[in-house]
Length: 355
Image (tube, rainbow, N blue to C red; front, side, top):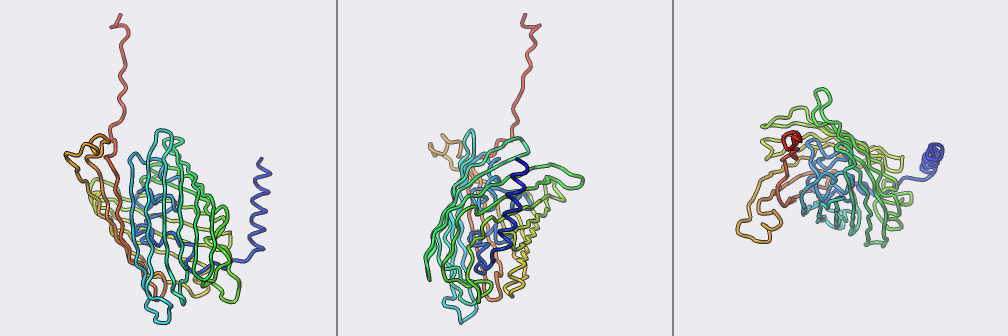
């Protein structure tokens, strides 16, 4: 089995080396444009600098949702703006909606995204609707695994469809020296058919387009907190993404949380192939998240589900995607109910006393 696995890995490398790499500019992050958490770097493969997971986490790693105890709803919208008057359109948008439902044996997640970006001179992705459904499970108190299926349809200057699978894991090491809550994770995305045969703005305009998002995109990363107490938490996350073994994308995320209510997120992305071809921006992205509890009193339905007290997060983010292309995003997360923080009690009976 080990020899077969090694042979398959080597064959994949050889096929990747022989094939071209020329996806549209911005296409590797196509499903990340609609999320303020993603734009600010907080949606990492290992759960972000300060760990957070919800329905939208399925986009980068289907295993991230496995430890969630509450039903989660996510909605977000991003306004895309171009300052280049030569573009076909100076306005674009992206939206998403997602749901997470925990069951006894597994956690279910569903996600829908729409991206409409027609900036002909810097980021031309056309129009697309994309969806994912996934299952995740806790294998141990440290290891989570997940699997998801995705599909989509794109149009404008060509039409095509996509269907693929994603898989991943997250391992929580715990405290490691001065690092608190250290985690590492891996995911393999786009294992199937992705978009092709459409007219887009490619990395190299003289060559034919290649499938996007890229087949067999591998993501690996780690994250931890440096300072963690009841008043403040500061952490960092690092991701390495390797699309089809022919590009390298580096993501760095820094976060600071105050009283577990206000979170500030800074992100930096370096896409090697886009930088080589002159499609890049090194301006860091920034995001804010405000989390609070709310009560739904005198509502029989919510009380029957133990949802009368729940948690909500609002988020905003800004990112300069390319020289003249800007993204401004806002999102809402609702987690129904409160986390069960009470550990199980074990009562030992004294059999001698009973006799």
